[in-house]
Amino acid sequence: SAKGIAEGVENSNYLVDTDRSRFILTLYEKRVDAGDLPFFLALLDHLADKGLPVPRAIRDRTGRQVQQVAGRPACLIEFLPGISVSHPTPPQARATGHALGQMHAALADFTRDRPNALGPEGWLELADRCGSDLDRIAPGFRGRIADELAIIARDWPTGLPRSVIHADLFPDNVLMHGDAVTGIIDFYFACSEIRAWDLAVTHAAWCFENDGTGFDATRAAALVAGYEEAMPLSAAEYDAFPLLARGAALRFTLTRAWDWLNTPADALVTRKDPLAFLRRLEFYATAEPVILLGR
Image: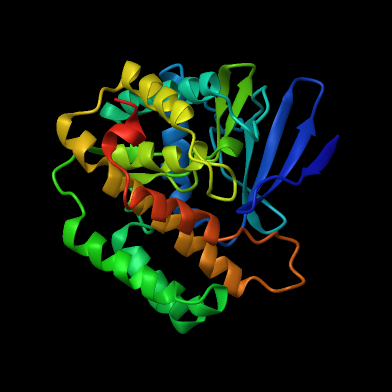
């Protein structure tokens, strides 16, 4: 049997049950460049080989992983057990931080590279493309974004450790059974970037209420403690973390703003509120590392 899965906004996914096992069939839509698929699939294989809970793409009898279905590139991917949580607890945040640290440690010898199209230069380009329409979302939105982009251009850290990162580790991309991580999925924003920025993205995704209010310091401290069990932060990463977190919040403010302005009213995709990440950005703009990291 096969049935569509509502989760996911980048690709079309189907749950496929066979007499041998259960799989996810993914058809890659226009936001995923087929030329990037060898990178993503090599990344999944590398992490799975290291024992991380990451799904492999199934190879056919000739060893090929990428197929064509309905005129689109497609992969049959291992099914992992577990569910994503909508209101994570501190123990779940700690387990996720630990899994992220393990992933970064496992990628130390991964040799492939993929530029980050949604890094600081990409944020500037996206803001320019949105233009004055940003103020349709909220009064003064465009000016606030311009101010933040100027700070990022002036102060963005250099010389911090880099690696391939997940770059999108929201709760819906982590499968859990109780307080244990059973799967890390959806690597289609993975890229080469400042390693601690990946922790900052995860921090922004896991440590607030969905509307961007209610920073949870206990959850944040647990996330970071779990991460540092596997990948301790350096003094330079610690000091840079508030700015990295501002960059994480800015990235999702802008991508959500673009989608908000350009998603047709009759589209089946639900637009996500960009102001939820602007609120995170405002919090990070005045926060000290000890508040964010719990130490």
